[in-house]
Image (cartoon, rainbow over all chains, first blue to last red; front, side, top):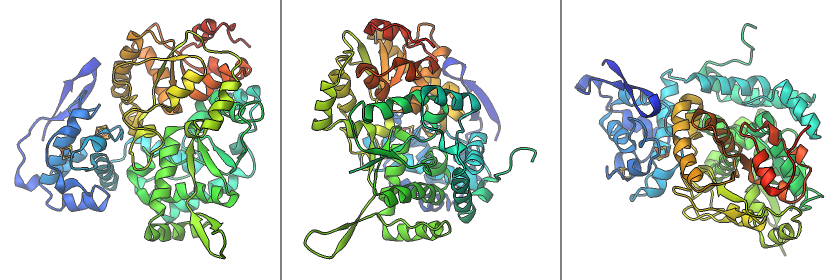
Length: 193
Length: 309
Ligand code: SF4
Ligand code: SF4
């Protein structure tokens, strides 16, 4: 399948799949059950009414439509769907407005679970998760921020205290136990170490 | 009941002034609530990363924080919609005995166990376990008693200030987790703003998303900014003086996205910072000069001189 670039709002570039003709070999029949296993339990019960697309802020802006994504999942269009990438804002508006009380947001989250298991891991996910391993926080305050804290008279940041070593150790233990480090391919070593 | 502060990652790394404001507003010079620190609290962890990729890891990391509050017998005070929904959702997951058991297996490796907080049933020897309570700063402030105390502690009334309240998605939804306000017609932040003497303006699509959530900001910043711009236009049409939100991540998005589409920015502050301003806190401690969009026009309109160091 070839990809084309389309330009949407404010110059936003979207990679779209050009060839919409899907052959049977492209379909993965067990895709729906995989989605259900990862928490997208409503995939097959969707009525395709389209309310979710209508209220979705992202569907307004780019070539991503909530209802259509669910239809693709029902068909088993796995590679097609996983290439939709991480555009759902998890705002849960679709869930509030679904007349059948289904939860498309959790389905999108299930797709992310599957994507990372297929090795599709966006760089920012790796960065945030490795930060947690290395520093015990997903975003670490830099030196300038720590200075600001002092100036504001805030208590010393816990991450600069000796007790934080234990916190980091516990977080590392949890992540090793659930094998999350192996899933994402991350380590607690700094780059180049 | 005693509370424990939970500041998360965005506040300490980007907007330390929010932390100052929250401590000041809740502390002895403000509302005099019993709040302490639990230094071992870590990332909630951020739902857009962890809940999105591996629920088991997300839950174990969240449960670790919950265990710390359980040991201290405190309610958790979150100041961020992300921390709020992540930790609250975790308590719901853990109310399933099977899930609790699986999570405790992981936690046993670090010597922790989540049970909830034991409470003796009155008049008997029986104990019940209450889930660790996860609160949002706004929910704690918005009680009859505290609102009364708040109205009596206004030193700088925010007269003639037009406030555009932005609630943020995870304050409102999903509703089975976050029933602290009406998801279709929330009022709590508006009420607080009004008590401070300001006007809370109506604008189109007030409940729309800031655009940043779920990893969208980190993934395609232009997409996030396009959504912010839509919302900003509606706010700007009503001539708001300031955007007020209970979430530092929405704040970050509004504060940084503005430079991509406007020259004349509208300052963005956390509801705790607005409270601290009105309650008479030292303005040089609120970290306002760390915001991208200058807060000076707002301060000038309130009638206080600009913050300088
Ligand atoms: S609103 Fe619900 S039933 Fe309708 S298309 Fe979306 S998920 Fe399916
Ligand atoms: S949760 Fe995702 S799919 Fe649902 S409305 Fe929000 S952005 Fe759209």
